[in-house]
Length: 358
Image (tube, rainbow, N blue to C red; front, side):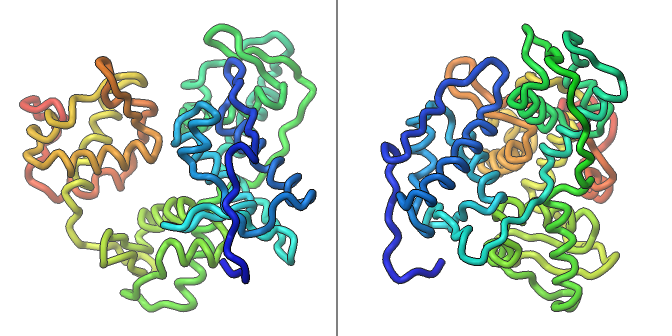
């Protein structure tokens, strides 16, 4: 971020975010994202704001709009990937210079892919006005896309007026649309390819990659997108990621890592496997203290594992008398899910002595 004058702090009243009325089935993230993009575009054109002006904090906006901070954070990430804003740790979120030589990149998100997959399904199966759409779970199974992403895509289709909400189902409002056939690569996948090309040209096996914030600046995407792209390359065995001072290491092609996983990573895999085999959406997991006793680890380690799964969209946390940790999506396990299970002696498939050792 480079400018001669100190950045101006935009206030919440100045933005007047009148987006707190959400219709039935309307996706809050999509509505807030659209409002943010429209407001930034109009305010720049009218001279009310300038590039590098700072947006209000996510907490302040969330309180004013009447949604969770996580909802505003998801909207910020989407708007950032569209090229309108950029977030810097310990600084805040500022308006990007989208006019002076900056060309907005059109990249395909998971949501866009899911929207097109659902539209393709509707066209191929001849849905007509008034027909009920199959369930979210069936759509996820048919398309190979997670329930969370399918639900976000359904919210987009409601905003587009293609479907509507009828009780607990979705009804077709119009059949006069076409599947646009967007590229089959997500934003994270495209960035993963860019990181792979960069690493191959500039690094030797064993070299450490630049930080996520540096890579985000290089490829003009959010830090979250870099994180997701790196995870894809870790699964391919091209990168090996370690938290703290170790960072992310470039392994080269087909050079799998052999280091042992951290405790929270082991627990994360066990909980992921447990959810996949035993849970349905909406089920409540045992309390953190119960899990800590089960695995003979600290509550802090358990919390870190649960936070990672929540960040991926599989869990959500609720406070109060009936609060706890609830399942919001079912992870699809691949071979990488058993990376540490195959190397540790304390995991025995079918062991009934422990609920989480299934």
